[in-house]
Image: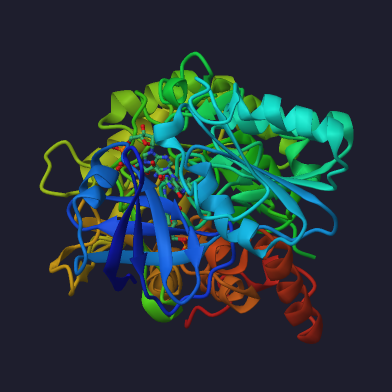
Length: 261
Length: 301
Ligand SMILES: Cc1cc2nc3c(=O)[nH]c(=O)nc-3n(C[C@H](O)[C@H](O)[C@H](O)COP(=O)(O)OP(=O)(O)OC[C@H]3O[C@@H](n4cnc5c(N)ncnc54)[C@H](O)[C@@H]3O)c2cc1C
Ligand SMILES: Cc1cc2nc3c(=O)[nH]c(=O)nc-3n(C[C@H](O)[C@H](O)[C@H](O)COP(=O)(O)O)c2cc1C
Ligand code: FES
């Protein structure tokens, strides 16, 4: 069963990224996602990026479904099922939030709930940075080309900040190569970590096995996983599943190239 | 107490994972094995790699009735499946390799490959599309079913299970056509569709799909009951099993084992352990010491 919601506002966030605001009866946790159906076009997973009375999806234009979504306006409708999956768990102590690209959309509602925290918002360049003004303080930017803030990968900036401060927990979401690196850093430095993963999803409800990584279904067992599972995930950032279920390496995964960081 | 034997294969309990649910990757199959399943049936594998249909591929029916799906038989293709089987066998329970093809020749080739990979038995998914089209399934054509079963039986040495479709009015005739199979698996999904009233279009990309879950249980129980009565073949029951009583219902109709799919969506991966203890509890209370005593007991003579 789908619920139909009406788009109440569309906001430009960055190049090819828009937020769609709507009202809905559901009560999502940060890190959970929905399946959005645009009839006769596509159905795809999307994290919740605003969880208040007015909820939001922050969507990057990638392919068929998201391109259609970008053409929608105030008053147009979306078909939803969800919220699905396990969200973030708030841990004690100072947090480091590391968001790459639209990964920041997944982290934003969590970041708003955290007390003691630093936030890294990263993208390829300034025009792809989202939520530049959403957080009032403790925000650091990183861009690959140096057009805003730190020049270089988010993971490099994170490593430097970890040298200087005593973070108890890292929360991250973004390109899988970035998550892999953050997990390795957390393991080495013995810091807790929670990461929200993205894998190709079909059913969204834990039956089809298409989103599974090392026996964990991203749609039901995740999308947010914590250190005890992340440290054991050999395939994270190394092996993916094609739509057919065939196991493929980084080189064979053509989608990962543009998304890597 | 729950041990059972089907086609000579011993299972520590009669609750097997149904084909197509959490069984594309070896890691998931191992996880289900460790979660108390008596055996595993793989996703149906064909000759070529297939991506399956585009989304939406599933529809959640309201009120816990079940699911409608049209995955479109996505699978890596038989040549890419060797490692998956090799690893799945590490789960420590029997692995049954499910296959689908368009004719007897393909079924035969796939069976031999599966046998080489080391599976304990073959399950023939006869619910795949008939070459003649019209949305017909191979499993409604008696001659074709007979040919496929006989050819495969002749060429492999491991047991062959034939999984029948409920989308026919002559399930007993089809079961008889599959007589040479070592066991019959009843039933696959029931053809159906759903329209979203607000969108005014069918929900599934493929329009038609297969129903599973609680809403099909009476159809499955009836199929098992009828076929058991008419053939006395070994039967594996499947369709809408959600708890211990549902599993016992199939067994009393004539099944020696059952398969569980959609219940994973409702109750999680722990469902195998849970159903097993629900069955044990009922058996203790009713002083039944072996599953065998219950097989077909509900048949009205
Ligand atoms: C749990 C989760 C949360 C997500 N949250 C966000 C978010 O907040 N903001 C955002 O912009 N994007 C998010 N995504 C990614 C988003 O789902 C894809 O960008 C979207 O599905 C693309 O659909 P499309 O029809 O436009 O692309 P298509 O034309 O279908 O394909 C383009 C490419 O997008 C990717 N993709 C397509 N479908 C899926 C799918 N079902 N699952 C995963 N990847 C897919 C593949 O790499 C594909 O090759 C999330 C993905 C997941 C799994
Ligand atoms: C998502 C999904 C995929 C399935 N894929 C297959 C398949 O590949 N081969 C097959 O023989 N049956 C397949 N089935 C049918 C199941 O094996 C089973 O016969 C049916 O779902 C009824 O059992 P259940 O109510 O316990 O799910 C699939 C069912 C579902 C829900
Ligand atoms: S998308 Fe089907 S199991 Fe996760």
